[in-house]
Image (tube, rainbow over all chains, first blue to last red; front, side, top):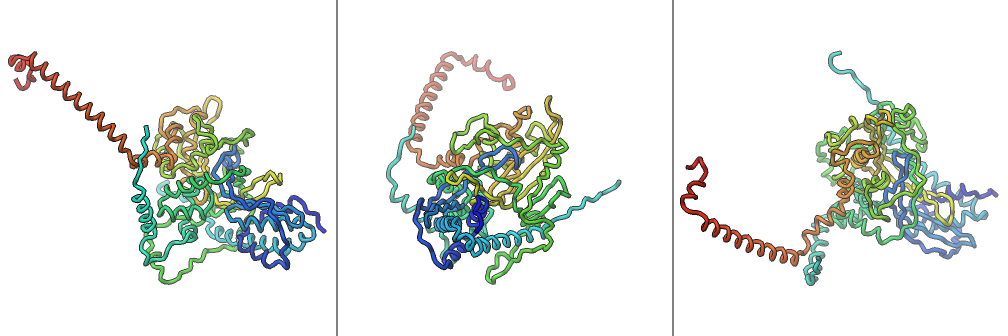
Length: 149
Length: 389
């Protein structure tokens, strides 16, 4: 059984946040069994102030806000959290449920393979496709001497 | 003094019902969906998010639908909506070096490490109306082009072009990250003089037209120093937003957002302490707000005049002028309030005007009477202009 580190948890929380809700709902619906859970915190939408840095790497400043929905559940005695950009309460709820399950060694191996890996693959594929579109617009400018010398 | 008006409920309710009907327009045509606006009017959505100061493409698209496409009304709706939500926390400052670019160009260096990618740009189009877009009877596909050879991994960090010049000391530094708290004008009222973090927040949510005009004015010569500005680097792409929730104590990604950042350099003549070098201006927006990002960078640079010991001779350098007039919601509130009932104010002004005129007529009559009594016909002739004598 693998040791579950903070890095692991950050990784799956990242994947669950960036994956479209439809895929998360499908993953939940196709689980062999859906364990019961209770809310520690009902899904709740609020704001995060996004900070940026002057010149990209200097002093921080407040750039503007983003909507965020958070949720906490108790599932088999484990607390699952989710913090998802946007206002989709169901997304936050199921992401919190998966976070709770993935922290449990009994579920981690299986869910990492059957849920997180395919989601990550889809996200990577999407990023790759986009990078290919962008790469096709790579430009080589030439400078030319004009007129008399 | 404000005096309230009462009444008009029925007319107001009917006006709003009429507005809803006009918003829908001719029902022979299908109703617009929020998703259609979000996908096909994306740059309008991006502007509403940036100036509404709230990243939520669905809400911005909804606001545009509700406002019949009026950007400022849509921005107002987003600003109003955000006041209904609690603030959870600040994000970790964005790491835009880890951006997944859709566009990245430099007007200063043609061979920049990592390459120049034009992305989906209007640049180099001929600005001719494309009538094929008017015909939607047949379903058309618009496949995006692809290059197989990426030359770099999609998640590889992109070097900042100005960092290379910075190594030679030719460009001023980006500045050390601040330890002190970051200002936020949605929490504390704007005070002048404002520090650069506050100025950048204000400029980011400022009206695009106003900032564009201010930036343009510096190019036309309304500034103190600095040579021709160069776009050192402009990039648009997706970047992760990270927060550290109190319950967890470690950073997590809550999702990606699209941003556009612009770095502008121009020659700075130097001061007693600083050698001549390229000075920097910076701008960033939500979405693909390239015009705005460049404009912010120009104005950011102009507003650094005090720090760089430059004389303040132009409007774009005047912090109060720029910052206090840049917000289109504040501006529209004060300008458009003129159309709301001012009946009592106007009545009192009418009264004042009547009294002024009555005083003026009385004093005119008195003056004429005095002139009449003091003048004899001879004196009148003597006082006539010489040319007419």
